[in-house]
Structure formats: C-alpha cells, structure tokens
Image 1 (cartoon, rainbow, N blue to C red):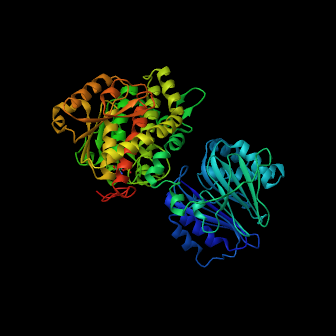
Image 2: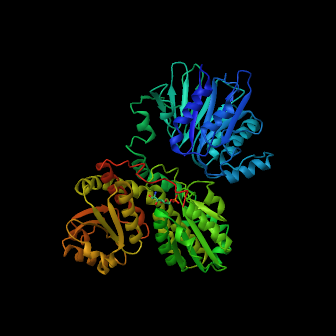
Image 3: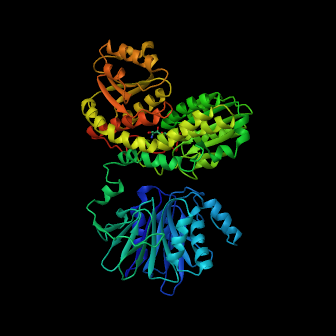
Length: 615
Ligand code: AGP
C-alpha cells in the first residue's frame, strides 16, 4: 500500500524524506515523489513512476535546502502507475500539495462538481480531487487552510491518511487520519510524519498516533495541535516506541506471511468496499456493469490462472455455475496457451492473477484476444501487465502481498469471484433476490467473522503444528467448493514447509489414494456444512477404519465430524459459499506454524518467486 513521509524542522528535508521512502519500500509500490517549499516560498515537486532510486536520480543536482516537505510511495488504486498519477498532487493554483494513502470512494461525484467550477485535472487519481476540493473550499470561503481541510473532510467518504503542505505557509504541515494509519514523530527541533513509524525510527522513538477523524497541525517550533472536522481539540498523547525496524515493517509479526494472514479482515473490507449497496444489499461490480451485454450474451466462461489463483478459479466455477447457470471451464494458463483452445464468439475468458505478471497467464490472455474473446481480469497489482492486457476487470484491492505464499490475495480473489457471480446472476435474472441479499449481507459481515476466526483458530493451529511438524506427507480433502480449498491448503503446506501434500476430492479417496492411508499419513478434511456433508463424514469413517489420523475443519456446533476426527479445528458457521474463505484461515496458519517449527524461510521459500514472470 502507499507510504507517506513528511518533515518539518531545521535539517534539509530531502535526505530525510528519501530515506523514509526507502524504509517503506517493503510495502510495495509503483511510483514515488516528493514536494518541498523552499525558503523563497517556491513549491517544488519531483515525482515519477518507478523506484525511489529513480526519484533520487531526478533530485540529483537540485536545490535541497528546503526544511519542509512531504513524500510518497504509491500503490495504485485509482489510475495507472505513471508520472502523472504519482504523488504529491498539487492544486490547480499550485499553492497546496498533498500525499494520500487510502481511497476516496465518492471522488467521481466530487470531481464532476469541481469540473463544473472550472477545475481541470491532470491525473486520474482520487487524490488530485481532494487537493482541489480543499483549494476550492479555501478560495470560495476565503478561509484558512485548516478550516478548508475541516470542511473537506466532511464531504469526502472513504479511508485515507493525508499530509498537506502550503507554499504560503512554510511553517506548518497538516495531517489527517481517517481509517488509514498516520504517526507524528517528535524530534529535538523537528517533526516527522509517516504512515509507518519504521520509516523515521532512526530519528525518534517518541510518537503521536493519530486517531480516526483527527487533524493535526504540525508547526515549526511549536507543540503539535490536534483537532477534528468540527474544531474540537483532542488530547495529544506521546508514546515511546520499543519495536525494531524489522518488526515494524511486519506490523510486529515475525513474517510478512503472518502479517498478511492477520490482515485479511481489513483486506476483505477493502476488497468489498463500494461493491455492495448497503441500502439494498445488492452487489455491484463496475467491470460487469460497464460490460453488461458481454455478460448477458456469454454462453461460456473460461477461467485461466496458475497456482493459488487457479484454486480460486475452481471456487469461482462453483459460484458462477450455481448463480448464473453459465458453463465455466477452468484451465491452467500454462495448458490453455498450448492446447490450441476452441474459443467461440460469445465466450468470455477471465484471467486471475495476484501479481498481474505471471507469464503463462499473460500469454493465455493474449491468445484469448487473438481468438476474439472478451477478456476480463481479476488482479491485485493495479496497472500490471495482465490488468492492462485485458478488456476490463476488477481489482481485488488487498494491498501488496509480500509473502511468496499467497494468503490475503486468495481470499480476495474468492470474494471478487463471489461478487462477480452474484452481479452477473442478478443481471441475468437467475439468482433469487433474497438469496443474493443474504449473501451480500453475510459478505459485509465477513471481516468481523474472520477477526473472530483468527482469534479462535490460531492456538489450535499452533498446537497441531507441534504434533505434525515432522510428518512426511499429508492428504487434504473436501467436496464441492471445499475441494479447491483443500488443494489450496495443501499448496500452502508444501510451498513453505517443503512437506509433500496433496489435495483430493474426498470421494476420490476410494479410487486409489486410500491405499496411502495409515497412521503416518495425516488427513486434513474440510467437513463444514453443505449438501455433501454427510458424504464427507462417510469418507472420514473410511479413513478411520484404515487407521488414518484425521484433522477435521468443522463449523461451530458440529457434533458428528468432530466426534470422528482425531483433531478438530472449529471455525465460525457461515453460508457455504463463504466457507472457502473462512476454512482457509486455519489451513494458512497450520502451514505457517509447521514451516516456522521446521525453521523454513517462510516469506521466501526455496526455489520460489513471488511472481513467475518466465515460463
Ligand atoms: C501461491 O502461494 C504461489 N505463490 C503461486 O502458486 C501463485 O499463486 C502463482 O504463481 C500465481 O501467481 P499470480 O496469482 O500472481 O498469477
């Protein structure tokens, strides 16, 4: 996600800002920039697509005397990664500039209103709308910058952290926090503002943590003042930070993977944000709405992906076939691209890719286009090659996934596929309204469910990991949507612990794999409530009668599968189409803790890359 650094004090701002951005690089980004106000009152902005090192090249030989500035690394959410969309964004008059982390949900409406007032825009970002909104309020009310900021925060909807610099007042920075973290570091005669204390911890360990709805006025040589949109003064509490930089980058977790597992309540909230009308509980994906005819005429969908994204695709097949009654084929992109596929006129090809750079998936997209298909992308990295190669698509908005083993991206992909199936199903008049509303309501509540699931299953996963750390093989099994969930659980284990694990449809056991069952072959069974539950329980009986050891993932209140299993992980009871998301949590944690017990490099497992950009 985006990173923010601000500085005001007596030192040269540039090295502090650039050094801070370097400390934030781990968050993932696609462009970087900074704005300074020089002693002569001139506002200077340097920004570019690319790395912080590219920004440093831009700064070579430039005046670095300014002692106030703001800086930013951008993880694109609205608008391609390019120089123009990079932050800071400057207002039309050039007087104020801002950096922004988060999403302004109602930016389109605000942008149209500002255009009607004569404002023009250089970028396609929501952030440029905000800086011009603040300027417009300030000019039309002839008020102070702080008053304009207070009024603007009453008009914008979304999650954001913002820092503003004003060339006509080079002795203050204004910082706003609304659902996106922002801290103020206190130096000897200077202040450091950042979205993550890690970026400035070398200068201070004393921090003010802004709370939601708070606006900080950070003035040179004066105490920090905190107020609200309604001008109510807030307490200013200073905390001493004990964490190391490395711990901070991982949010206090031991690995990025664990941080990303625990981020899932928030990332699903971000993934769903603005995609379910809370008044009517109707799901709306703009990518589907804008291409309605394609989805109404579609006679077949073909989903191409690799690895974890392919598992998400298998789950998406269940959703789309049951809610839209359109046949869905799921293909490994690497197979699709070489099998001279038959693609008919009304086929839609969907490409799923977290990185948006997987070579096989990109090649599959290009082949699909050559065959005349409409191609829809489900990616995480905005502006990535696959995202740009498709005709339209939906971003999963889970923020950069650093751990090689995919976790939050998987649950984000499954969520988007469910929203896609419901949106198309409604457009085609197939999915019953009450069923659609119920699932939409459950989706809105899902972040809280995941929160409690994480609290509930973490100790269970930790103790099971101790028991199975030295197992040599695992079989994961499930039925229906829980078969791909089993595949994903097996992949998590094998790719970070190096233990061999296979996923199987539970009913397939008797067609061969059951010969493997003995006390040395742990079986993870996803036995959660759905139309095949009783059959899954029978499969568990078959395993038990052959001396197998069963770890069952069951729903709260289960008293049948739980009785049969040797070990039980209980997850919250949710609608069966949400269960792949909820049941994945213990499987992610089980794999993580076993890998940690084995001393593996969890975030960077051997032989693996986060994005397979070669064949
Ligand atoms: C998943 O944990 C792996 N890292 C891998 O299977 C990954 O899902 C696959 O390489 C596809 O990557 P993509 O989603 O970025 O295309």
